[in-house]
Length: 229
Image 1 (cartoon, helix red, strand yellow):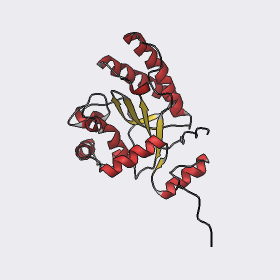
Image 2 (cartoon, rainbow, N blue to C red):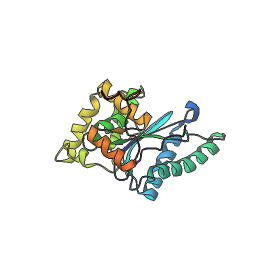
Image 3 (spheres, one colour):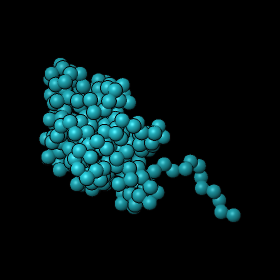
Image 4 (cartoon, rainbow, N blue to C red):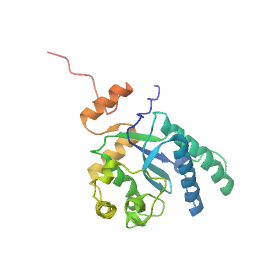
């Protein structure tokens, strides 16, 4: 059976996940993380993709981003893969692919799902046991949204600005949200949509994405339709 086309829609936010090839370690040293961020910043400018959040984890990368064209996300990660992969292989004396060839993604409904997806990305280091507080992780955008530093990679969404009338209010509100873990059911729903390539949002949003892309954007009920009486 042919592999289904990836669900990518221009001007809609997407949650992206890319894993190390064969579960291998993608980042070994601080220099690896710095090199990836440099490649990400260059690729963002080249492909005009707005990145709203990121988390670089030892075996995977999470991004929340909005592309100007449907193909822009693929071009973004291909560009990073070429630059970062070649540099990584040289520094670590290895050959071959570093990341899985096919990234995973979910189209995210805004504004209803945006902040939850932002939290999902930036709280991933806590969920993986790397730090006790998300804002302390140096290789994510949590410190930017929490007010500790300004990250040139990040393009803030209107949903984040609505968290407060001043930068201090927004940052304090968001730090509070990061301190509160997402409900397990919400985490599962976000992770499943990303892994399976679905739209993440209301039934009306899913239908609209299906009309735009001409492909299923959610799981279909198993079995044959019931016969009419």
